[in-house]
Amino acid sequence: MALSNNVIGGINFIAMLLSIPIIGSGIWLSTEPDNSCVKILQWPVIILGILILVVALAGFVGGFWRVPWLLIFYLIAMLILIILLACLVVFIYMVTLRGSGHHVPSRNYLEYHLDDFSGWLRRRVQSPFKWDRIRNCLSSKTLCAELNQNYRMAQDFFNARISPLQSGCCKPPTECGYTFVNPTYWISPINTAADKDCLQWSNEQTQLCYSCNSCKAGLLANIKKEWIRADIILLVTLLALISVYLVGCCAFRNAKTEDLFTRYKHDNNYT
Image 1 (cartoon, rainbow, N blue to C red):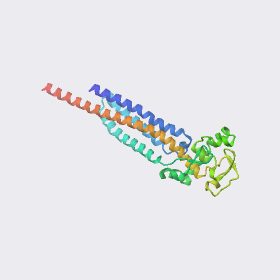
Image 2 (cartoon, rainbow, N blue to C red):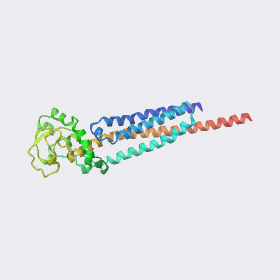
Image 3 (cartoon, rainbow, N blue to C red):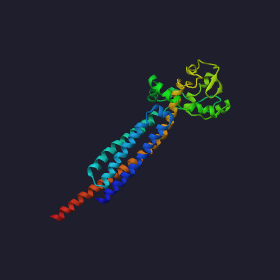
Image 4 (spheres, rainbow, N blue to C red):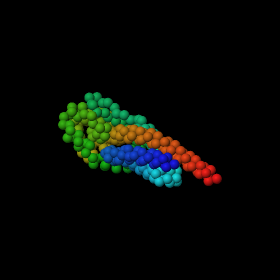
Protein backbone atom coordinates (compact mmCIF):
# COMPACT_ATOMS: atom_id res chain seq x y z
CA MET A 1 0.00 0.00 0.00
CA ALA A 2 2.81 2.41 0.88
CA LEU A 3 4.54 1.75 -2.45
CA SER A 4 1.32 2.38 -4.39
CA ASN A 5 0.70 5.60 -2.49
CA ASN A 6 4.22 6.77 -3.26
CA VAL A 7 3.62 5.99 -6.94
CA ILE A 8 0.38 7.99 -6.88
CA GLY A 9 2.17 10.89 -5.19
CA GLY A 10 4.95 10.77 -7.79
CA ILE A 11 2.47 10.70 -10.65
CA ASN A 12 0.67 13.72 -9.28
CA PHE A 13 3.97 15.54 -8.93
CA ILE A 14 4.39 15.04 -12.69
CA ALA A 15 0.85 16.39 -13.17
CA MET A 16 1.87 19.47 -11.15
CA LEU A 17 4.81 19.98 -13.51
CA LEU A 18 2.48 19.63 -16.52
CA SER A 19 0.46 22.61 -15.30
CA ILE A 20 3.51 24.82 -15.88
CA PRO A 21 3.36 24.88 -19.72
CA ILE A 22 -0.38 25.62 -19.54
CA ILE A 23 0.11 28.56 -17.18
CA GLY A 24 3.16 29.62 -19.18
CA SER A 25 1.12 29.65 -22.42
CA GLY A 26 -1.44 31.94 -20.84
CA ILE A 27 1.24 34.27 -19.50
CA TRP A 28 2.97 34.34 -22.90
CA LEU A 29 -0.31 35.27 -24.62
CA SER A 30 -0.88 38.09 -22.12
CA THR A 31 2.52 39.60 -23.00
CA GLU A 32 1.82 39.72 -26.75
CA PRO A 33 0.64 43.20 -27.87
CA ASP A 34 -2.46 41.95 -29.70
CA ASN A 35 -3.65 39.47 -27.08
CA SER A 36 -2.98 41.95 -24.29
CA CYS A 37 -5.43 44.31 -26.00
CA VAL A 38 -8.12 41.76 -26.86
CA LYS A 39 -7.94 39.69 -23.63
CA ILE A 40 -9.89 36.63 -24.76
CA LEU A 41 -7.86 33.46 -24.28
CA GLN A 42 -5.08 34.14 -21.79
CA TRP A 43 -7.14 34.19 -18.60
CA PRO A 44 -9.08 30.96 -19.30
CA VAL A 45 -5.76 29.24 -20.03
CA ILE A 46 -4.05 30.62 -16.92
CA ILE A 47 -7.03 29.77 -14.67
CA LEU A 48 -7.25 26.24 -16.10
CA GLY A 49 -3.52 25.75 -15.54
CA ILE A 50 -3.79 26.95 -11.93
CA LEU A 51 -6.75 24.61 -11.29
CA ILE A 52 -4.77 21.66 -12.67
CA LEU A 53 -1.86 22.63 -10.40
CA VAL A 54 -4.14 22.79 -7.32
CA VAL A 55 -5.85 19.47 -8.10
CA ALA A 56 -2.53 17.75 -8.81
CA LEU A 57 -1.20 19.12 -5.52
CA ALA A 58 -4.22 17.61 -3.74
CA GLY A 59 -3.48 14.26 -5.37
CA PHE A 60 0.19 14.57 -4.42
CA VAL A 61 -0.69 15.20 -0.76
CA GLY A 62 -3.32 12.45 -0.78
CA GLY A 63 -0.86 9.95 -2.23
CA PHE A 64 2.11 10.55 0.05
CA TRP A 65 0.13 11.16 3.23
CA ARG A 66 -2.52 8.50 2.50
CA VAL A 67 -5.63 10.68 2.51
CA PRO A 68 -8.22 8.66 0.54
CA TRP A 69 -10.77 11.47 0.15
CA LEU A 70 -8.12 13.72 -1.42
CA LEU A 71 -7.29 10.99 -3.94
CA ILE A 72 -10.96 10.58 -4.81
CA PHE A 73 -11.26 14.37 -5.19
CA TYR A 74 -8.20 14.32 -7.44
CA LEU A 75 -9.60 11.57 -9.69
CA ILE A 76 -12.95 13.33 -10.18
CA ALA A 77 -11.64 16.89 -10.45
CA MET A 78 -8.74 16.02 -12.77
CA LEU A 79 -11.08 14.14 -15.10
CA ILE A 80 -13.28 17.25 -15.32
CA LEU A 81 -10.26 19.49 -15.96
CA ILE A 82 -8.91 17.17 -18.64
CA ILE A 83 -12.28 17.30 -20.39
CA LEU A 84 -12.29 21.11 -20.14
CA LEU A 85 -8.74 21.27 -21.51
CA ALA A 86 -9.70 18.98 -24.39
CA CYS A 87 -12.71 21.21 -25.17
CA LEU A 88 -10.45 24.27 -25.12
CA VAL A 89 -7.95 22.63 -27.48
CA VAL A 90 -10.73 21.70 -29.93
CA PHE A 91 -12.33 25.15 -29.63
CA ILE A 92 -9.07 26.97 -30.43
CA TYR A 93 -8.52 24.67 -33.41
CA MET A 94 -12.03 25.34 -34.74
CA VAL A 95 -11.92 29.15 -34.45
CA THR A 96 -8.43 29.35 -36.02
CA LEU A 97 -9.22 26.99 -38.90
CA ARG A 98 -10.18 29.87 -41.21
CA GLY A 99 -8.32 33.02 -42.14
CA SER A 100 -5.16 33.50 -44.17
CA GLY A 101 -3.27 36.30 -45.88
CA HIS A 102 -3.53 37.36 -49.51
CA HIS A 103 -0.62 38.16 -51.79
CA VAL A 104 -0.65 41.59 -53.43
CA PRO A 105 1.33 42.68 -56.51
CA SER A 106 4.91 43.82 -55.93
CA ARG A 107 4.69 43.27 -52.19
CA ASN A 108 6.41 40.68 -50.02
CA TYR A 109 4.01 41.10 -47.10
CA LEU A 110 0.45 39.77 -47.04
CA GLU A 111 -2.81 41.64 -46.58
CA TYR A 112 -5.88 40.35 -44.75
CA HIS A 113 -9.67 40.46 -45.16
CA LEU A 114 -11.98 40.37 -42.16
CA ASP A 115 -14.54 38.08 -43.83
CA ASP A 116 -11.94 35.30 -44.11
CA PHE A 117 -11.97 34.64 -40.36
CA SER A 118 -14.43 32.65 -38.27
CA GLY A 119 -17.62 34.37 -37.18
CA TRP A 120 -16.76 33.91 -33.51
CA LEU A 121 -13.46 35.75 -33.87
CA ARG A 122 -15.03 38.49 -35.99
CA ARG A 123 -17.62 39.17 -33.32
CA ARG A 124 -14.83 39.79 -30.81
CA VAL A 125 -13.71 42.87 -32.81
CA GLN A 126 -16.72 44.08 -34.82
CA SER A 127 -18.64 45.66 -31.97
CA PRO A 128 -17.88 49.44 -31.94
CA PHE A 129 -17.65 49.42 -28.15
CA LYS A 130 -15.15 46.54 -28.12
CA TRP A 131 -13.13 47.92 -31.02
CA ASP A 132 -12.80 51.39 -29.50
CA ARG A 133 -11.10 49.85 -26.48
CA ILE A 134 -8.92 47.56 -28.61
CA ARG A 135 -8.00 50.39 -31.02
CA ASN A 136 -6.93 52.68 -28.19
CA CYS A 137 -4.80 49.89 -26.78
CA LEU A 138 -3.18 49.09 -30.14
CA SER A 139 -2.46 52.72 -30.96
CA SER A 140 -0.53 53.06 -27.71
CA LYS A 141 1.93 50.35 -28.83
CA THR A 142 5.10 50.97 -30.84
CA LEU A 143 4.30 48.51 -33.64
CA CYS A 144 3.90 51.16 -36.33
CA ALA A 145 6.63 53.47 -35.07
CA GLU A 146 9.09 50.58 -35.39
CA LEU A 147 8.42 50.43 -39.14
CA ASN A 148 9.62 54.01 -39.62
CA GLN A 149 12.85 53.17 -37.84
CA ASN A 150 13.50 50.00 -39.84
CA TYR A 151 12.44 50.97 -43.39
CA ARG A 152 13.42 54.26 -45.04
CA MET A 153 13.06 53.36 -48.71
CA ALA A 154 9.84 52.27 -50.39
CA GLN A 155 11.31 49.12 -51.97
CA ASP A 156 12.82 48.01 -48.67
CA PHE A 157 9.39 48.31 -47.09
CA PHE A 158 7.64 46.52 -49.96
CA ASN A 159 10.10 43.63 -49.62
CA ALA A 160 9.74 43.43 -45.84
CA ARG A 161 8.01 40.61 -43.98
CA ILE A 162 5.98 42.71 -41.58
CA SER A 163 3.51 41.22 -39.11
CA PRO A 164 -0.20 40.88 -39.99
CA LEU A 165 -0.99 43.52 -37.36
CA GLN A 166 1.45 45.98 -38.94
CA SER A 167 0.17 45.17 -42.43
CA GLY A 168 -3.44 45.82 -41.46
CA CYS A 169 -3.10 48.78 -39.09
CA CYS A 170 0.02 50.76 -40.05
CA LYS A 171 -0.54 51.32 -43.78
CA PRO A 172 -3.47 51.68 -46.22
CA PRO A 173 -4.55 48.72 -48.39
CA THR A 174 -2.41 48.39 -51.52
CA GLU A 175 -5.42 48.50 -53.87
CA CYS A 176 -6.12 52.09 -52.79
CA GLY A 177 -3.02 53.19 -54.70
CA TYR A 178 -1.50 55.46 -52.06
CA THR A 179 2.04 56.77 -52.71
CA PHE A 180 4.68 55.79 -50.18
CA VAL A 181 6.40 58.56 -48.22
CA ASN A 182 7.36 56.42 -45.24
CA PRO A 183 5.77 53.27 -43.77
CA THR A 184 3.16 55.26 -41.85
CA TYR A 185 2.74 58.26 -44.16
CA TRP A 186 1.07 57.84 -47.57
CA ILE A 187 -0.39 60.40 -50.02
CA SER A 188 -2.38 60.78 -53.26
CA PRO A 189 -4.64 57.70 -53.40
CA ILE A 190 -5.56 56.58 -56.91
CA ASN A 191 -8.78 54.69 -56.12
CA THR A 192 -10.52 55.55 -52.87
CA ALA A 193 -13.56 53.52 -53.96
CA ALA A 194 -11.61 50.26 -54.13
CA ASP A 195 -12.19 49.56 -50.45
CA LYS A 196 -13.97 51.52 -47.75
CA ASP A 197 -10.73 51.28 -45.77
CA CYS A 198 -9.23 53.66 -48.35
CA LEU A 199 -11.28 56.48 -46.85
CA GLN A 200 -10.49 55.39 -43.30
CA TRP A 201 -6.75 55.89 -43.71
CA SER A 202 -5.27 58.89 -41.88
CA ASN A 203 -1.68 60.16 -41.80
CA GLU A 204 -2.30 61.23 -38.22
CA GLN A 205 0.06 58.89 -36.38
CA THR A 206 -2.46 58.07 -33.67
CA GLN A 207 -5.12 57.18 -36.27
CA LEU A 208 -3.43 55.52 -39.31
CA CYS A 209 -5.66 52.56 -40.27
CA TYR A 210 -6.73 51.61 -36.74
CA SER A 211 -10.36 52.18 -37.77
CA CYS A 212 -10.02 49.95 -40.84
CA ASN A 213 -11.41 46.46 -41.30
CA SER A 214 -7.93 45.52 -42.50
CA CYS A 215 -6.63 46.37 -39.02
CA LYS A 216 -9.24 44.11 -37.43
CA ALA A 217 -8.30 41.37 -39.90
CA GLY A 218 -4.58 41.85 -39.22
CA LEU A 219 -5.25 41.63 -35.50
CA LEU A 220 -7.17 38.37 -35.95
CA ALA A 221 -4.39 36.98 -38.16
CA ASN A 222 -1.84 37.76 -35.46
CA ILE A 223 -4.09 36.22 -32.82
CA LYS A 224 -4.62 33.13 -34.97
CA LYS A 225 -0.88 32.59 -35.33
CA GLU A 226 -0.27 32.91 -31.59
CA TRP A 227 -3.30 30.82 -30.62
CA ILE A 228 -2.16 27.98 -32.89
CA ARG A 229 1.23 27.96 -31.14
CA ALA A 230 -0.48 27.94 -27.74
CA ASP A 231 -2.87 25.21 -28.93
CA ILE A 232 0.02 22.93 -29.89
CA ILE A 233 1.47 23.32 -26.38
CA LEU A 234 -1.93 22.65 -24.82
CA LEU A 235 -2.47 19.58 -27.02
CA VAL A 236 0.89 18.04 -26.07
CA THR A 237 0.22 18.80 -22.40
CA LEU A 238 -3.29 17.33 -22.69
CA LEU A 239 -1.93 14.05 -24.07
CA ALA A 240 0.66 13.91 -21.28
CA LEU A 241 -2.01 14.65 -18.65
CA ILE A 242 -4.24 11.88 -19.99
CA SER A 243 -1.35 9.42 -19.79
CA VAL A 244 -0.51 10.50 -16.25
CA TYR A 245 -4.16 10.33 -15.22
CA LEU A 246 -4.59 6.79 -16.58
CA VAL A 247 -1.44 5.63 -14.80
CA GLY A 248 -2.72 7.32 -11.64
CA CYS A 249 -6.06 5.50 -11.93
CA CYS A 250 -4.26 2.18 -12.28
CA ALA A 251 -2.05 2.95 -9.28
CA PHE A 252 -5.11 3.97 -7.23
CA ARG A 253 -6.91 0.76 -8.17
CA ASN A 254 -3.85 -1.31 -7.26
CA ALA A 255 -3.60 0.52 -3.94
CA LYS A 256 -7.24 -0.27 -3.16
CA THR A 257 -6.68 -3.90 -4.17
CA GLU A 258 -3.63 -4.12 -1.90
CA ASP A 259 -5.62 -2.57 0.92
CA LEU A 260 -8.47 -5.06 0.52
CA PHE A 261 -6.03 -7.95 0.33
CA THR A 262 -4.24 -6.74 3.48
CA ARG A 263 -7.52 -6.46 5.36
CA TYR A 264 -8.62 -9.92 4.16
CA LYS A 265 -5.32 -11.44 5.24
CA HIS A 266 -5.50 -9.69 8.58
CA ASP A 267 -9.04 -10.93 9.20
CA ASN A 268 -8.09 -14.53 8.33
CA ASN A 269 -5.09 -14.40 10.65
CA TYR A 270 -7.28 -12.98 13.40
CA THR A 271 -9.80 -15.80 13.05
